[in-house]
Amino acid sequence: MKKVVIIGGMAGGCKIAARLRRLDPTAEITIVERLPFVSFGTCGMPFFVRGDVDDFNQLMSTAWGTVRSPEYFLEAKKINVLTETNCTRIIPEQNKIEIQDKLGNRSLLDYDFLVIATGSKPAMPKFPFPRSERISFFHSPLDALKLRKYAEQGKLSNAIIIGGGFIGCELAEALSSLWGIEVVILEKENYLVPRSFDTEISSLLGKVMEVNGIKIYTGANVEKIDEKDEKCLVHFNDNILETHFVFLVTGIEPEVELARNAGIQIGEKGGIVVNSRLQTNIPNIFAAGDCIETINLVTSKPEIFALGSLANRQGRVIANNIAGINDEFDGAIGSISLKVFDVIFSSVGLNTACAKNYGIDAGFALASFYDRPHYYPENEVLFAKVLYQKGNGRLLGLQMCGKGEVSRYIDSFGILLKKSSKYLDLLDFEHSYTPPHSSPLNPLNYLGGIIQNQEMFGIKCVSPLEIHKLEYLCVDLRKEDETEQMPFELGNITVDYDHFWKEIDKIPRDKKILCVCQKGPRALEVAIYLKQNGWEEVAYLGGGLQMLNSSF
Ligand SMILES: Cc1cc2nc3c(=O)[nH]c(=O)nc-3n(C[C@H](O)[C@H](O)[C@H](O)COP(=O)(O)OP(=O)(O)OC[C@H]3O[C@@H](n4cnc5c(N)ncnc54)[C@H](O)[C@@H]3O)c2cc1C
Image (cartoon, rainbow, N blue to C red; front, side, top):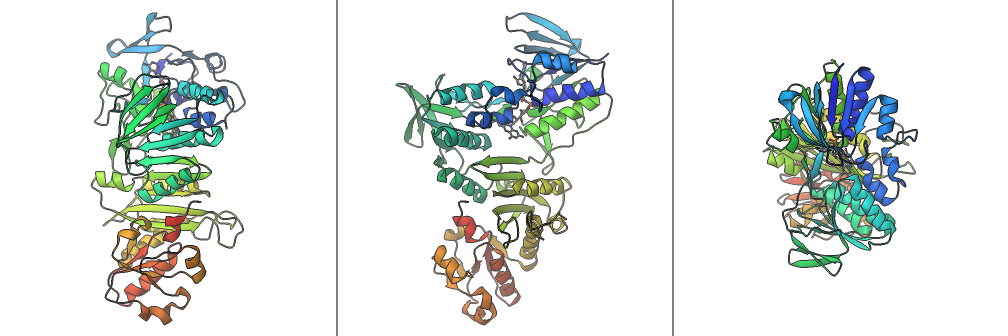
């Protein structure tokens, strides 16, 4: 009979225990968790705060409504769960861990296999701030409970969120949409969710938030937080903002102290180093979830991916290996999804900043399209930015947003990314098509075609955010009614796309030309015609003016 001890009783830890029980009916499985509960759906926290999830227990319930309590684990699965129990030491030479219960009693637990699934902790901001009831992280289920109570008691009328990553944005929506709390986000970088998005997609995210009343300061360098007269004063960039409550959501760090103290190897990114079987350097100690380093399959370098989806998959791999079924976890591509005010923002792979950090020369294409044929009564606009490696054409990443089927394309792209596919593979991507769901060519097919045209004809894609900085002569190909609806004055000339060949001579040959239209396709097509007919420097506005002016 194997003795298996798991430290950490949330996504990774519980997945391992449940899978292992199915594979090995005799294993003695113990989960050690320092919080007062186990198997909590952390990713649901923003939706509990918002009120979409009414009861805290729902985030710990099975699909059939049973709360996954320690008693449930014991009765239904023969798994021992020790809550409010802290693991204080791993003693690998004796195959034991030291634990401490809530009364302070210490004891030892034996194991044949140990799994470290200790997750992550909030990254400590570098600026000074007082210990205060009014300043909180948003990481633990206890943070969500406290916040929901405050909101229900009407104790919060405004809040500042420091950190505009995906959790900061989800929290901002949760606070402002249901509870009407005035929310300000302070983000250090120049755009929101800087680890996953580029400025174009991020600026659309910012607009959605601002239209819904959230105030955003980017490039905000917080210097300190003071507390005065039951208020917090947040000092940044020579400004001082006053608020009832501050949330610190500036990132996470892997929780690795126990492992480090036990001589387990920690990598350069600060996570536990594991092999593809998810074993640490001590063969009978495995690790999973936010506490480990995972190979980024695009860069082949280790990275910290704090994602519940990965923790669950890694849990399964570990359980298989402990049960004697050889299994491997090759790495990840970092797919994330975020819903704010009914608009979905997703990304997979590298964004431009990451590609640059790794010294990868990234080309890009921007596009906007409808998720269904234009004639279909309900269709939603989608915006996308795709990155590929210059020279070999390998796909690097995709960012997409809209109210339509964003995740479908992000996930399909992810499969291609894992196979080191090239942009031409996007053209071969086969999808199920019916007008209520998609167009005959889907966004991935279009993106492949756009990059192919850019590369084949030597046409540059210009970002709508760059349009005011460039020294191009803009050729506006829109119809009169489109121009009236969305005026755009950059000393441009107007050419009627529907009669393009009659008007081609209006376009000077000695200037750099930027073709502009509403969504992008007309501009790219005309750019190709110009290139074929001897114009030298030709670019088109990727995603069109719609990308610049849209707010969903
Ligand atoms: C607000 C929020 C929203 C999120 N949304 C998403 C999302 O939409 N999609 C997504 O993919 N991911 C999301 N995540 C990330 C996701 O929740 C984590 O990646 C996932 O929970 C990691 O699982 P884990 O088992 O590795 O760690 P955790 O879930 O952090 O669990 C680790 C557990 O170990 C316990 N522990 C640590 N040290 C000890 C010790 N010494 N003794 C005993 N117990 C210990 C901790 O108390 C903790 O309960 C979100 C995270 C947050 C905070």
